[in-house]
Amino acid sequence: MTAPTVDVLSPPPITPTYVSIREVSQPTSPREPATAPRNPWMFAVAGIVIAGLAAIGWLLLARGGSKVPPASDATRVEPSNQKPPEEASSKGRDGKARVEDSVVVEPDKSGKLDFSSPRAELEGKGLELQIQDAKAVVSGWRDRNASLRWRFRVPKPGIYQVLVHYSASEAMAGGIMQLVIDDDEKQTKQCDVRESGEGKFHFEKLFIKVARAGDHTLRLGVVKMPADEFLIFDHIEFLPQR
Image (cartoon, rainbow, N blue to C red; front, side, top):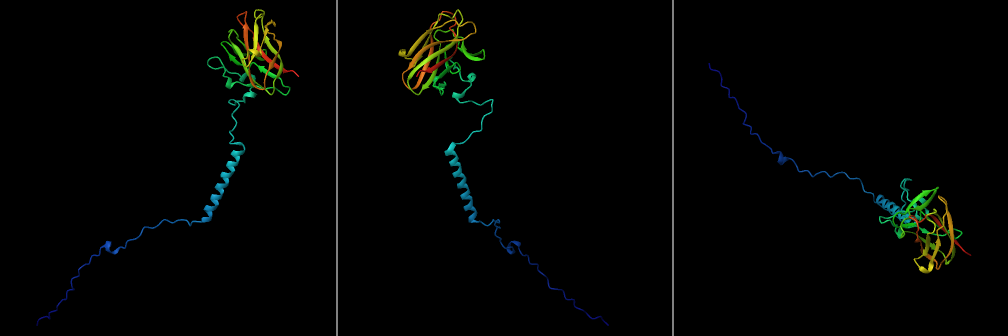
């Protein structure tokens, strides 16, 4: 007796199907960055604020200009008409102070003009500003061609009594000084140099006329110098005559 035959059914072959990822994936658009919502009122307010600040700035400039912080005491430069004696005079490389940089002498409330040593232009070799007996004076006047010069201003023409303050030793006595206004020979005055005593000061008195109102120059020079040094100069006063 034979065993029955059993047929074994094999499953049908399975063919794998490959799917490309490139075919399946869908293109995606790049994500736009998130932006804050725009408020038109915000830009309008900012524009108004900026315009207001600009208007305030123009008003400040129109009234007084921009202000510069004051310099320290070590570097502060005073206005020329308020300079202390030791800062008011300077000499150029050639020994002369330029007229444009000099101080303009103006009358005080009484009408007096004070031509001090620190305000003088030192024209010539050897002249120098020194402190003697607590006052600023010009010494070293050994050049016959040297002179002192000032610029001054008067509100009206007139006659002035002139006081020339100086010091002269016995050897300096006998010299002659000369005052000239505007380098005009018609407005020239001369006077003698007298001994004042060593270290002492005195003055010579004379009268001079200022022919017109406005700006002028005054020059003190040498006519005669008998010694090696002319004199030690202190200051000149112009006293208006009524």
